[in-house]
Length: 204
Image (cartoon, rainbow, N blue to C red; front, side):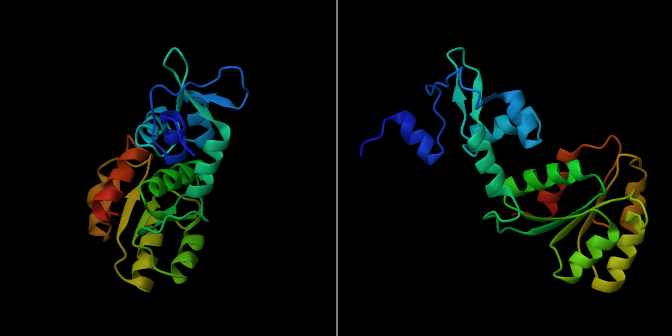
């Protein structure tokens, strides 16, 4: 069966500027709506579209549109049951939205990601298999990040850890290194900076 360029692009993940998106179907989302649907910044989904990871269509005016079912399929591929099999990163934070943001962005980069909402949950997860990297929030209820770092070192040795916090300034970077962490991201906290530090420390 022959395929025109638009059909070829859709089936094989190639984005063509000539692909036109209907504007009357409720299943089509704008760039902003798609970014909100995936829980990422508009610049992130724009980058994924340019890379062919998320199919993008275009209105006659040149604006991007996204099919809801394409976004759902992307989330399914990026989820815990997806096909990513890169280095294992454990994200430890009591903020579920931040954990989801980190998971989606890291999995798109090729990492396998586990989440933990508390230090106890994280320590239990490490018992089941040591991760290649731990992204650890400093400020958490109960056992905080500093205490977890110490317990993890006592039980499992030197697993690479990057500490982060939106409530602790960069002066804590020296303290983090002295305690055995491999990096620190503080105020003003930027999740994308944390992802870049993770990629530098443990490349895919």
